[in-house]
Length: 106
Image 1 (tube, helix red, strand yellow):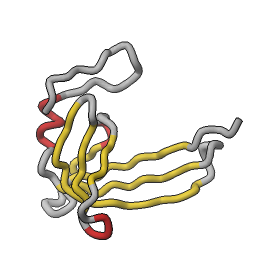
Image 2 (cartoon, one colour):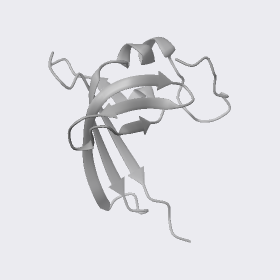
Image 3 (cartoon, helix red, strand yellow):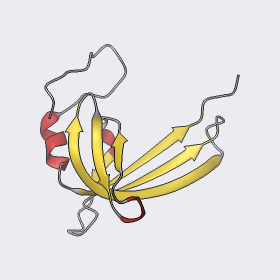
Image 4 (cartoon, one colour):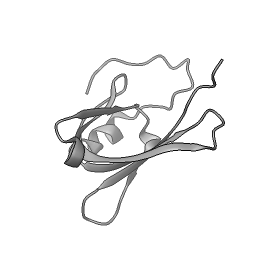
C-alpha cells in the first residue's frame, strides 16, 4: 500500500488502509452498468471476475482479471463502499457493483 495521501477537500469517501489491505488476495465479481446521460437508460452491462492484487488510496484497486479477460489488469476507484464481502465461503469472496453515467452531450 502506498503512503501517498489524497487531499480531503473533495467529496471522495474516507480511505481505510486496514480494510483495504484485507481485500488484497480476495476474489471479486464486478458488475458494471453503463447508463445514458439521462441516468435511466441502460446502454450496457458487463461482468468481470478476478483477484484484487493491490489497493491504494490514490491509485485505487487493481484487479487481475480471470476468464475472458485473463491477463488484463482492471483499475477501480478507491471507494471501499463499493465492495461487499460474500459470506458463501466460496468464490467470489467479494462482489462490487458500479454504475457509470455518460456525460450529457453539449
